[in-house]
Amino acid sequence: MRTLQTLILTLILIPWLLSVPAGAQSSRPAATTSLAQAERNSVDLKQGMTLEEVQTLLGKPKRTALRNSGNTPSQPWAGTLQWTYSWSGASSSSRNLQVVFAAKAPEQWYVNSWDWTDY
Image (tube, rainbow, N blue to C red; front, top):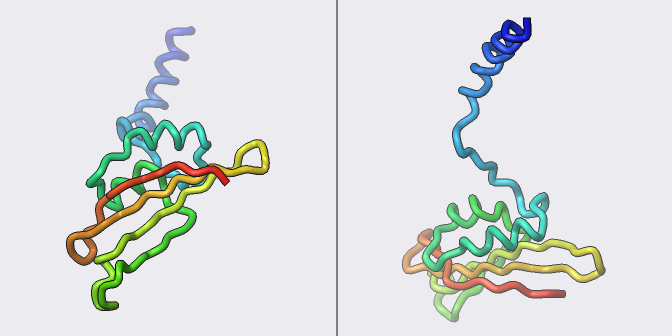
């Protein structure tokens, strides 16, 4: 009887297990990622990563900023793009991760640097 129950349960679960991609990871927004998880994920940041790679790793940023480095308005990509991720701690302070992108051409942003800050 137990073997029959196990067989039935297995047959029910097989289609569900086959529909779940192996190694699938959700790109959860930073707001739902814990600070500890974000710190672990940030270890995998590398210079040269694309916007999409960073978003897959850390989720969507809380704030963004585009800073022009004194070039003409027709070349905003000549400045830096900054993404800020924020997490509130148990105390009143919060931790922020700022990822700075540079570009060699329009729409070709890549990670230039990143830094953790406390507020």
